[in-house]
Length: 91
Image (cartoon, rainbow, N blue to C red; front, side):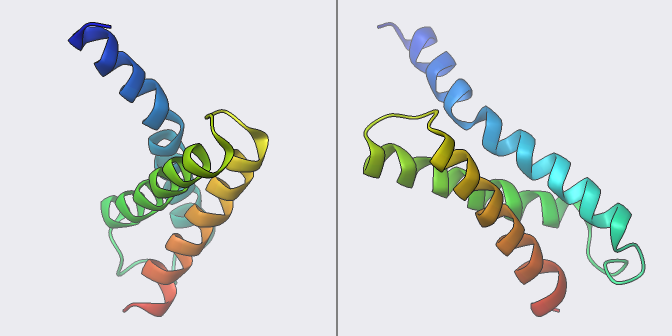
């Protein structure tokens, strides 16, 4: 495997986590507009994407491969927990 192939593997591994973080932050800002007015969208997206990426790595280690539905479900829970923590608890 060459360096370009390794880069594509890493991008495809963390792509769903980054996409989930971006979409979840946008939806949270839309639904809780007043409550999250003081929190920036980029900060929410970064926290949610980082939590989802950590869950992705944990799912890869625990389950032996990526792309399992259990990992995707845990990614959603991890991103939601990170959004709650950054948006409502840590102000």
